[in-house]
Image (cartoon, rainbow, N blue to C red):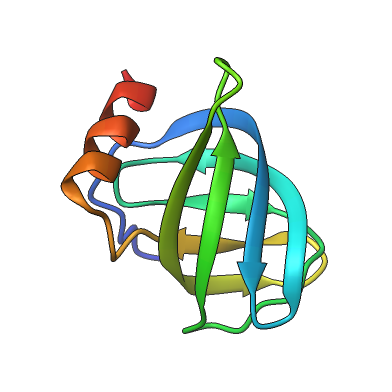
Amino acid sequence: MTEERRTDERTITNLPTRWVGLSGTHEGRVEDLSLGGCFVNTRGRVDVGEVVSLEMKLESGEWLQLRGEVIKDQPSTGFGLVFSFLTDDEESALRELLV
């Protein structure tokens, strides 16, 4: 059994996303979201430790832009991202989304 490392409560979502990493620009869906990070369902290629720029399309139609570090890669499925670079404004917008 693997030990749970997450400290923030997770919310199941289905938000369209665009992200940019070393392999280029890709699309996907954010399926699992917390204040600490998310899981991006995508076929785009990433490397653990890579920093990516992520935009999530909110229900309002606006895009929330965040950056984070890839902490887990599941090839052809997606990747886990930790939000290690949140500004105060980004954290506030993320908190509103998670309410």
